[in-house]
Image (cartoon, rainbow over all chains, first blue to last red; front, top):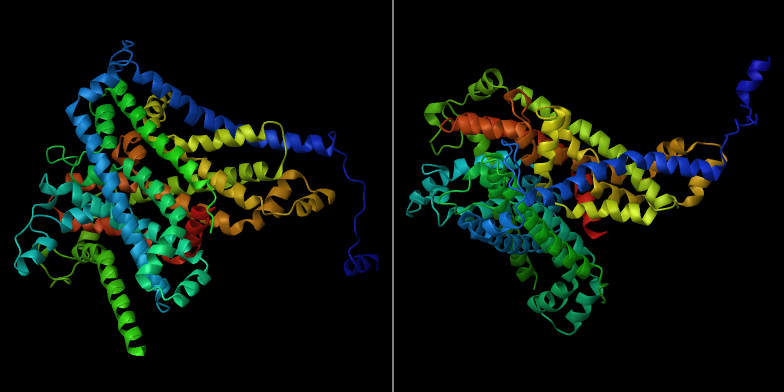
Length: 311
Length: 272
């Protein structure tokens, strides 16, 4: 009988709680610091100490195969700036960043604007434009290499249309632009999403007011969309710059930096220096230069984006 | 007026369809080539006269492709679980507790975002060589098991949980770990799933660090395997394209399933 009763109305247990030796406040502190221990150790050991170590290696002549690693001060840096290939890779990286970011902003914003004007198949188109972003960069690089081969499909089509066949990745003049196009193609979807969200945040009333004043589409775009989208544009440009500064996978898989170093990026140069020539000192110095460039862009971003935008 | 609207719509749709063709064409040609026998590889035909599964059979039976696929899977899953656990926990603590050193710790973690991976690969490699991590799963994974970006993201979402809810659980006698798992995590589930998807994709596609830390063919992850595989088989494009298809199709499927989370995730992270 008693057990059925218990089943019908489960008793609210008021048995005395096991008293912890610590107060509630002490328990909280114990929880906080135990849980932070491993993550903090991780950030110190895996990120901050290696950063300092990189600075240190950069001041040494650091051949991994030899035991003698003499201190050379700024020599690695001086040598880098006298190294024609490094200067070339720095110049190429600048081209990657400038053309890549501009291309992605224009295409991403363009597609977002087009998608805003339709009300059917929006999800479908969004998915198609986004798919390249989630796929493997290595796989995509090889697919583009195949399409753009001397006797590949693109040249076949060009010939059929009466144009001359192109060298594409084999040409020192064209290869870098082809790689930039590949990168724009792959990263476009990300920018599109950011711009779609930015466009949605612009209050409709601005457009309505402009229409009453008789503004046409172009005027609305220049005087309302662009200024109000400014924070989004800055955000996209900064994220884009940092990712194009780190250009590596596409170049390494499509051209290995050739022909004639015309596509070599700073990161590819660093990779070759460190892991093919084993000159860790010079390679570390080059990563420090890359770090400083990224740092400047990040600081610029924080300055710009923390400014509240006023409507 | 109506007619003009119609023409405008038609132009918009035409442009979008044209763009879609450009976005999809490389994938279509990749799949098309992967089914071609060697004799038809250089043809212009979309569907080969004699389509064949042989390319897939060859790379699955004749290379370590399945092993590479498995390696990528193991690395991506373990990293994702680890990031999910640590990032939510740290995000929760920073958002919901007041303790000595909180601001400093948060700034310290955030500032690590400014350090590019490229700057760390040389010390990481030297360290891995000293500790015997080269060519191990741990060696591939260790840089990514906690992510500062994820901590920032989870902190932003944890802040929206009402303190009263947590205090109520405390009064009920739940310990701090149960509160975290049973009360806090369910509240931020959408953000957590977005973080998981991005971590998984990022680790599945990672290239630079795995390329450096992996030495033997057996340990390669899929991107590294594919890069070497294509390098070693320059002329066999039908095989390279079959490999690329295997590397890309699962990602497209994952994307189509989690589409909403992924897009929401980008929107939220991009504008916070």
